[in-house]
Length: 116
Image (cartoon, rainbow, N blue to C red):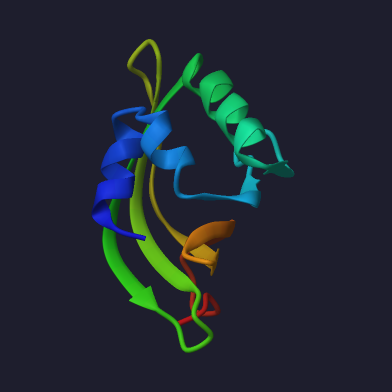
């Protein structure tokens, strides 16, 4: 994980993002619940989400954990398409990589029991 991937998300650059996904990626559907499975479902989820929400995520810290997962603390700001502020918070994105690709991503609340 790096700042460039978050910049690609904020720019809605799907080709760059999906190129980093494992064919069996599991991606959390934060607004709907459950997971999207595979890059096509992730793409469909994001496209649907962007029709009603304008999320921006900015990494503030990136750490590689001892088990190889990548923990990214992000400042997350979500507006409705009308400009109304819906969310302004800090959360943790926890990535599992396989063969250099994103195999799974989880979203954790920032708390003392989040992996460090």
